[in-house]
Length: 159
Image (cartoon, rainbow, N blue to C red):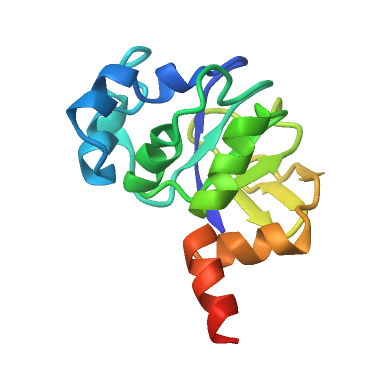
């Protein structure tokens, strides 16, 4: 997949991704997408385009275990998050909901760069730099390809 980098720093708390008060208002991804990163940049959600990639530093998704922090990004058409590391809970929530968590060195990626993720290769198309991502176990890739854990279980049941 190739997309435009939307860059954030370290320790991106789930409440930065979408505040818990928004969860009380509704959990529909189409509703939540309007409020992603609103505490950091109120104009961010309006600027997101389907296919954008979130790029961050260390410890992305720390804080509470809110699944809506994944579904809000997916509602905005974001299919992957690249980060130097993830909180374990966010990482599993991402996989279980079909969002690709890519662990890689993100320090050379700038806002607006075109980035391609293909298997374990991450290429900054803007600068030509390439790097490697930590490979995901095959079962996690199958869950993501099925659109999440529910889709994966439905496929397995039919097989």
